[in-house]
Image (cartoon, rainbow, N blue to C red; front, side, top):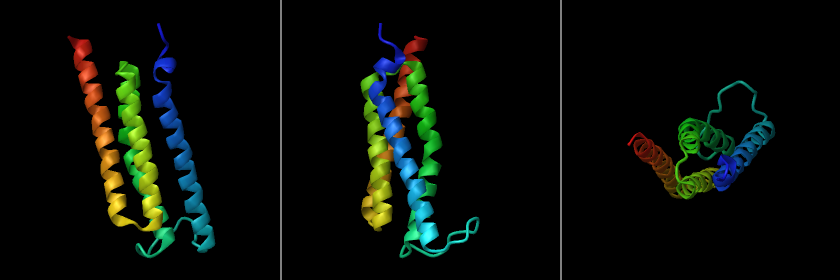
Length: 139
């Protein structure tokens, strides 16, 4: 019998990739703040024409979405949900968040919205996968 780590290796690789993307996002935001001489601890003002504003919003949006993703991802792992579906949803979410980040930086608003929607659908898929798996275990 395979271990959890072995069966979920691909999904865990997606989570690790997402972690590196979030680290990159932190660094981009910090460097943008330093370059613009932004005072740490003060709100980032401005609008979408300002890169620092876009970097701060991209970071905030990722942070806002991370809780639901982590909850559904770890529930899928702990419930023993189908590894292919779990990995597919995890990689879809990861790719969508990376695309969202890049589109925010480049101020590509429509592409940013599409990538956000794809990431949201991946989270819904993970939640449904958890619900189906839980239902199967209960019966």
